[in-house]
Length: 574
Image (tube, rainbow, N blue to C red; front, side, top):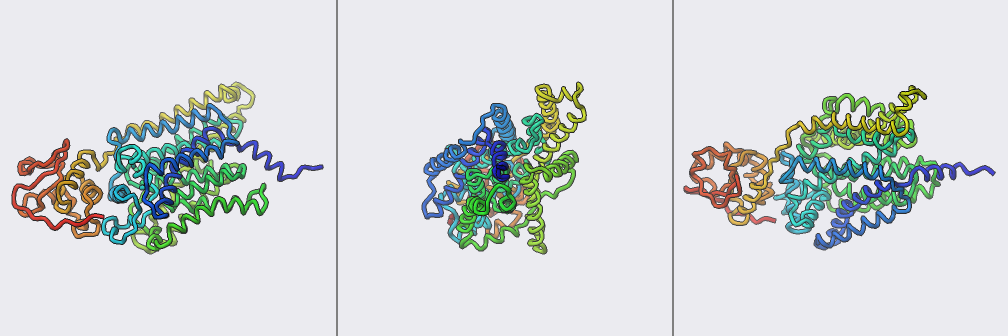
């Protein structure tokens, strides 16, 4: 009697798709971050105040549950675990070095201040924004999805610091774990007859060629929420790759958790993985119609329910997708020709292979969403193409995996051409593994040299200015403080995020409020504001002589005007 073809397929997929120990570690780490966001939101949604040390055991329990859920399918392989741990540790160490020793946010521009405003509000109230009057202080951030801000505030509470000092390590951890997932996805796409671990590692190394998208997104542009949400979107992608090889409730449950966290953090990423899930479920050869529906509901319903709960009563949030701003425009120089050629070749391979179809579909879905966003925002002024161009930031991760796949296929081709001769023997077995690791080392040197040689980003935020701002907020009227600091964005941050002045005010709208030459002129003239936060090395000598220092924190100080001054009435802060 002939065997059922579907049974043969299920057996084959089951044997090839069991999880590795490295994947369980990665999934558990992501579950810790995702469950923290979801638990905090649900507690707050129920009308309760968020208690940081009540959220922590909930998150740990969710992480343990995820590990237990996956435990029946685990294959522990020391090489994969070591490679995964090394990748995550190396990326994290490098990112922490970039911001060492202060570990404060590296980005510039107004966005860093706006994100810190929402983090500060959460820390002060342990609630999300529900009062209309707060919009005068937070602006559009009252409508912003709060996932990354909740995570930073909670991490600050758990470590005894605050959200300002926790946000960069949180972002760095998300990027490092994201690199680990890229390795794990690339590993699943590797052909079985190549040195899989080193060739999968090449995908991670190639990821850092378009560094403006991978690192510049937070080290320069302060897209904190977007960067953290990329981790959850990449986690959803990994779950789809796993599920497509062997459909299981555990991988679909993980998809739902990562999707819920992605929506609460930066919902723009949620579309492509959902489209891929529906496509894979409809096309999967090994499922009956009721099974397909059951898996779809498990993956989609929790995300849809949470999205419905969040958007209820938040009609202004819909305008989020028409947001405008400065964004990197893709060009060959931002990627490098090697990356573009390898990723194009790898995507061509992924399209033709069963294991690559989830990745190929993801890139296609990202492209469709980019075109849709371009059509929706057409003619909206500043918003034109902004969100569409943002889709490139997510596509980069799939393209990096495709680049690693292209190198693996090239390896296969060279071995096949070399045949059984000396060259072929060199590329097979243990000698081939050593040769592949040598290739990884050479590639690592080539990729790392420009990264290490580049000057470390100079943050506009500094610990001395923060301490001066905190002292001023506690001891003088915040509305009566001027800013004599070298960087305009540092002054903007002090004015709003540290001192708590309103965004919607004539003073905040006046660009001269934050420009050092204009501030010096105001300070020299009589009847100006009585107090100022100053960056002492940035001031001319004659101006320094006219200051009465109230408190000093290294190169920063809070000072008082010696002559006559005036001060508008202070405002109540939320």
